[in-house]
Length: 228
Image 1 (cartoon, rainbow, N blue to C red):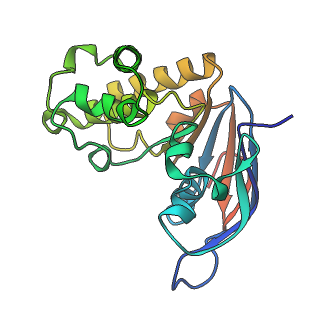
Image 2 (cartoon, helix red, strand yellow):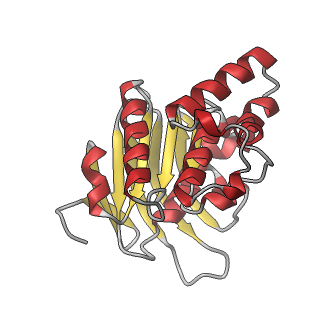
């Protein structure tokens, strides 16, 4: 059976780097599963995100061997817009994902670029904001929101594309307790809808919503035994 996301013997090294950051990573994430990947700073967690989301090799070059399969299709054969409809990523810094003058414009940007009908764009906008509890902020300027609110809007922008797979790259690292509760609630809701979620984490307190936890150490994944 094809799984939503599979990583097969993946090796990667940055241009000009001193060897591989990822060393033979193998991973399969099932539909409806919440997987957390932990590891020390510099262990390659964000690099793994870039590879899974297609940022490597489509945007960042380097030495890439092995493959990432999205619903059985190698991501190297897919263009970024195609990947974005199937896999969304929420980064640690929400400011890197927000650029529109209003929340409404921000969340509608992705569906508009898919050339969806006005009605469907409106429906996706309403649903995405409702999922993150930010319905009352649609006319606000994202730059004037708190860090946690910005992160929720960045997440809503990803949700508006309705991807099957979502990656959270330490998305809870710079927000307060209430913001973390809100994002965990969204993750639980996504799982209930059969979405596949990958959390890149360093805070063990955020692992309570994960079904499975793996440790990235020395460029390879291994079972997590409760310590780094």
